[in-house]
Image 1 (cartoon, one colour):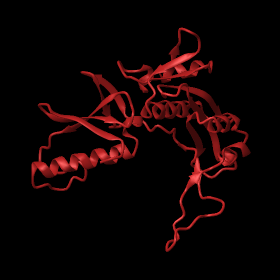
Image 2 (cartoon, helix red, strand yellow):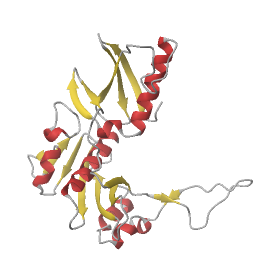
Image 3 (cartoon, rainbow, N blue to C red):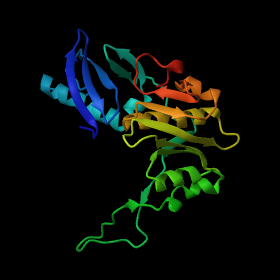
Image 4 (cartoon, helix red, strand yellow):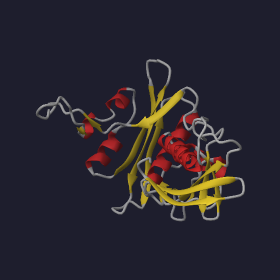
Length: 259
């Protein structure tokens, strides 16, 4: 099963099966729906299966693949009976058309590779802050904030956006979040930056990925002092003490269909 998966229950409903689970340190309890088959075929590959047990194994294989490709982040969400039902069918891509998002690498090969006796394997090691995100700095991105957070051991996540097609400035934006406390129950969206002329949807996608990454790492809320009405469609609301806050525990469908 996928790393981070923790099974809670399996519930049979009249027309479908619900696999209820927890994901990493995310505070939500999730459910994955699988329709009962009209024919003895795998819900994953469509190939014939010879027993109910084999069908159940294929259900878990399908769920494993879905989780590995971002099921929790990209799915539509519906709160029901205390858990969040994930629906990935026809869900919009997290990344806008023509762009992709990924975490900024924080590890790499050491400058002097250490090789074990009898092998040529090289282990990845944490990079010095000054060596991370240098490609972003070259196209005008401000990397001083994530570099400071790395030095303070408070970096929660650092996500970058880049254009899929070859162009001179391939990297087009990034977003950074930090941990607010040692217990890592709250994260702060510190920075969202995109290059001039880049669609606003890329900014929204960066925010979405940062929020979901923080939630998967255990954050109950994400706060920010960034004063941007464009954050509201992604679930941020005005906080009592100023700024904006996003609650990562789903209690109702978030505004705009995002979560």
